[in-house]
Amino acid sequence: MTKQSTKPNILVVNDDGITATGIKNLMEVMQEIGNVVVVAPDSPQSGMGHAITIGKPIRFDRVDLYPGVEMYKCSGTPVDCVKIAVNKIFKGKKPDLCVSGINHGLNNSINVIYSGTMSAAVEGAIEKIPSIGFSLDDFAADADFSFTKKYIKSICEQVLEHGLPEGTLLNVNFPKGDHLKGIKICRQANAKWAEDFEERIDPYKRPYYWLTGVFQNFDKGEDTDVWALENNYVSIVPVQFDLTAHHAIQTLNSWDFGSNDHTKGAEPKHKISSPDGLNLG
Image (cartoon, rainbow, N blue to C red):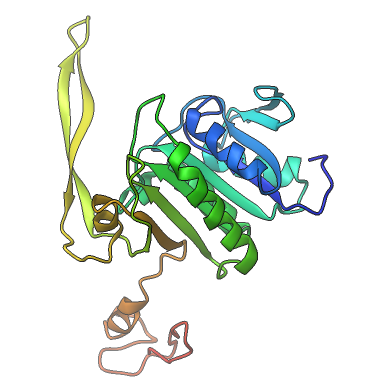
């Protein structure tokens, strides 16, 4: 990272690879806001989740895909890209913003768990960098991202101005098409993939399997990301990486685990507190 100015320093990452149309569009928006550094996988890494590279080397090299843009391709995962950027390019001086995407395909509802796009943004948040993941409901290589740009710029400017609560990042999804009604702040819908593994036969007569599935929405609420996207709104879901099920702590404290410290019906010696300081023992 060589640029010095009063503009914010912005890290741009993705999971579709450094040559993807989505990251080019995101980079162009970020250039209107601040100093941009792009670090992206050298090949598509969709569905990698929060995977990191262990046991083999990671390589990253400067590339000149677009004039005047500091860009690096990385042999690792989307999360590796963030780690490399923070430690070797920014050299520990954190960027002011980390943006990931624009992903080819939605990352709404349960998809956030599997998404390399969102995991890169989560890693930025773990590093205490305000972070946002952007996705569009269009898998086409030549997808039209142009109509997303004004929303992306506005969202990023708001985050730079106000910051985000610690441990929180934003998951932003766009429906396909340019007839958007506006932005909805949402919760993650209760939905999942009903998966199937289609059996096929290779030229050597050996079976192999191809993952397919149907997206099932069990949530009829009108405050969810699925509802917003189906009704032509941009959805913004605040996401956290603390996976503690705080609502279950009190229940678990009532169980008898057979330990010397906690016999059935007795007060446990070690109690867990909730985030608001209430004793849940």
